[in-house]
Image 1 (cartoon, rainbow, N blue to C red):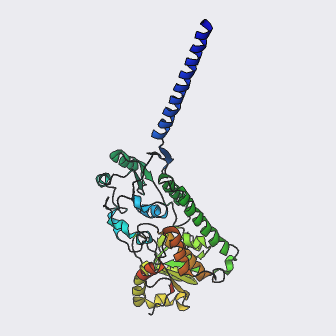
Image 2: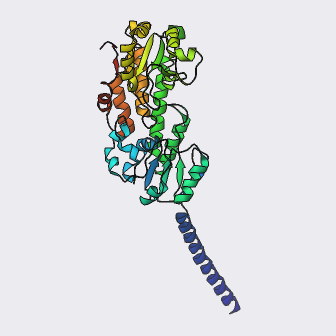
Length: 370
């Protein structure tokens, strides 16, 4: 009897252990579900926890919405900055013009701070932010709203910057669109390699010299507005006369210096073309002193700085400039079709005609007398 009682006790204990083990597994699974939050590190090095099931998003700060539109589902956006309601010059808004009907979450713009009250009104699960110059202000916004804030960045150049790739990856992870994020990054890498491969074997001494004039920079400027270390020229290995003058940043160049540089080709940013035309009518002697003008070697690129960098337009510009400087190496490229390919890939629509309509008809050779 004692043996039977002992065996029965063992069986009961075993059954209880099995039951409790099962309960423990269930509790553990439920706990994982309840704590299935996503932990990411943003571009400021901040550790941010994204609650499981987050599916309502807002984007604030220059260029933030653009990067989201490349990757995320725009139907999950619950608000928009007032500045984004201007569709001109912005392919990402042209492709998603329904966004302008969303509630306003703040003024937007580089000189305006985020509006915590308006952000709270639309109850987003996550805030993506390009207001990223100060870690403490990003943390303060997160504390004020109680909503996770993910800081994004464009880095230091217009195209092919690692910070852009990181931002794209972050958007993909947070919005559960990692596959799409990988596709976008792969496409950027593909274009970067293609541009480089087309020009890498050209002898530098055989390249024409080139100058960027009327560069858009916080507004429109005349022919003096230019840059050394210009990323679009760098992408195609161009001989930038500003680089050769040991200038590696944005500058308002003295006109006499431009005469001394005397580039073979001048690329004019369409954002400042009207200022160049006005100046030409007042100072023809200056322009006639430039060989690029005398030889009809002025060409129009599309402006891409509009609430920060329209990466799609910048990429298309790089191909257009390549076709101007190296017609043999870019003989297979139709710049207009390349533009449409890029916006189709990144935004789902061909947008060259829409953008060209806003800027003198788009890519073209410029005659200052017309």
